[in-house]
Image (cartoon, rainbow, N blue to C red):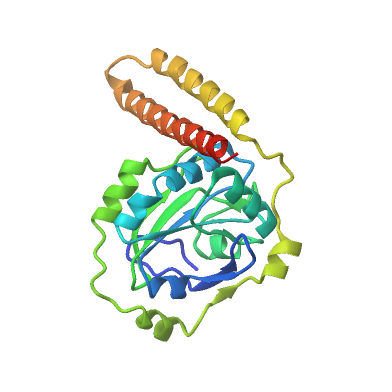
Length: 250
């Protein structure tokens, strides 16, 4: 399939969630638009921050009538640990061999993981917003995503139209296949404390780089550094709020 673009149709799929239960795109689209979050894995600090930020702002998705669902090659048991660590209220789906990511043109062949991306799918199954990261640290800000959701036009399309057009899931991975066939890289998973240290280091590095960017020709680069620092601040804040929640519940 060709790479996704705004206005293109997302292939129908069914993947197991963190508990091994099947989650289908067409089934969710019968209820609401969907925000698909493709991420590298539970070992990636930026992915942790992004998922934690969306978890702490889950009411903002609900208020806009949408449902996030995050997709990686991680198996269900890894996703279950991630849900517990970050206290995530939305499903983490196991695309064990990257079949869905590949079909969407969101696959990093070199690292054997999904390319970081956010895809807003309206109820007709079409892409209304797409952000594809140029590298592991390139993600949309929460403000950019929520602005796209505010502009979402559902056009009153009934969910039944999705079933008629696709005839059911085109791509399907079972819980057993996800458990036994995941291509997840063998990398350690950071805890919340390690995430704090990582974000502090990343912020310090971008601060140093920002200080080197002077002159008219480099203003755009300086703005990008500032945007990235805002992203890191947001992820660090989400990680701290998650740690505070964990302490309150212990």
